[in-house]
Length: 169
Image: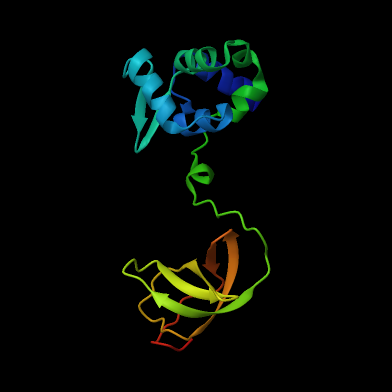
């Protein structure tokens, strides 16, 4: 028997094989939307349970969610859909996603302002002060040159580790 058909039989048997994070990812929904659906339409221990910190759905609850949000439950009979929603711990979905960059070009700027928010500093670029995200601004000093990468129009990220000593890399 193939691995996919074994999973299909386990799921039909009423086990809890579908992580809510994976369902949200496949359907393109936020976890909050699925949480509201779960509160309104599903019963704990019958349709869903917790596996550590993760919410896990039964086969029937997964079908209800698919039917509610897509209008059809026919995807559940598809082995490929089962593979996408299978009970693989959703570690990859929970890892921090990096912010998309406008450019990969590293630019050198000078620190112009230090704010009360320790994760933001002001740097001067072409006479304009822009925000730069840093892990901690405690070792930055005004006038220090820093390498940055653009994230948004007026938001940049530090392109290297924060300085270990005050004013020195």
